[in-house]
Length: 233
Image (tube, rainbow, N blue to C red; front, side, top):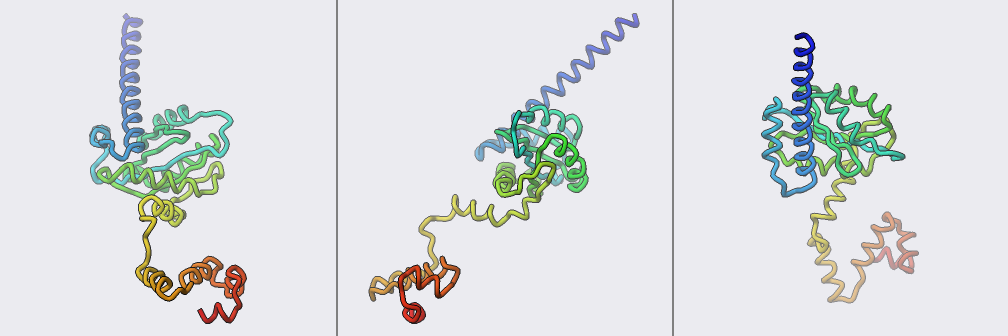
């Protein structure tokens, strides 16, 4: 009887672990889809997170983990280990990175960082921390922010970099995708029109002046002009 009860206990544990693994795989798959596709529907992911105990008012944050050197790939192992060790995180592998969706309402960001740093040092990974958002914000956009800013960090193993320190490169990268290539200040449009009518080179001169860090000598040399001619312009 004791052996039979022990056997039943093991079977029950196996089913519980199997169900947990299935839920984890579904969550990872849904998270991977949402952060990869801007048109993906995130409602199923939100519903599953709410069933897991997440609240609509919780503050979430993405942390992206990368390895500066990849002699071997342990992303899957690290992702599963983090999911087991930290119930307030949801880890998923995407491309060559590990994406962490952290609930900083359950565990503060500072505590989360302190918990992660030993893992980063042992695994030779570094991390980039995004900005906080809610469950109803665009999950894709907030992951894209941390993904782009991670390109500009120093990439030192064991370190966690704050994405806020790399906002300017991120904004420039966004402008390349969103700003029209013909975007021009109205004053510059007037200047180009004036050049056409009067056969002057004020627009080109201004461009060369700014390109040479507003140096009169360097600008005159670049445009093959006398210094006084440049000053007159």
